[in-house]
Length: 149
Length: 107
Image (cartoon, rainbow over all chains, first blue to last red; front, side, top):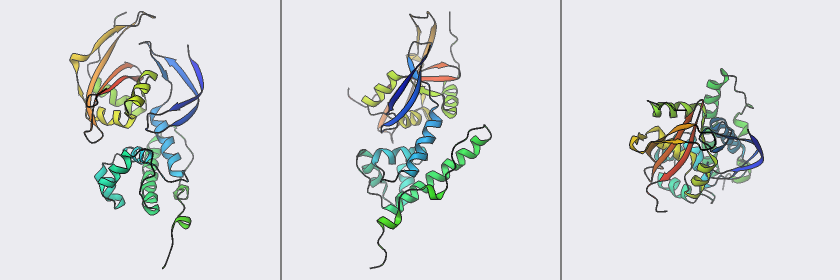
């Protein structure tokens, strides 16, 4: 016997995600669970964050770092930021990070490449999602950057 | 009805994780939010986790009379800041996260 939740706020990635029409099922152990594929959800959230037109907060930065399977130190090296800064920003989960626009774009680029590599593997299994390319990265340089002196 | 105990629960859990079939129950999701444990933490702990076989539990669902095993796995997450005990149950093709406790955290 299953029911459906019209709306459900999923928080297990560290920030709220509103899900619609979530099927609720009961397991043999008598516990109810949302009938979702966690890998597909994770991928969908990563895709959404690439296109997010506002700066990342600490929780979203942490989610993306874990999605990339990078340590604090490794991400710090990729972005040219001390890993201690990344740790500090992640701990202040609800606050905007101190990443510069170019660094945030670089992070989103890494995420994009990772998504594409996952999708390459999933294509053979019939998994389909909207194609993302570099133009999907929505952190507008022209607004944030001042060129010249 | 008796349930068979999984011999290689760690492999089973990681297979479910890779396929997206490791799913927290609503109860576990509430605990995780209250204890500030994310699904990424759970994944990280499971990837390098160890069995706590002495904590395994065999229970009957009073509604269905079905018996099932609950397995305990312990691992570190969040750069060692979290010491997680994760209780899972297998119901092919899914594996459920039933309980997550951070042993480093004072409740």
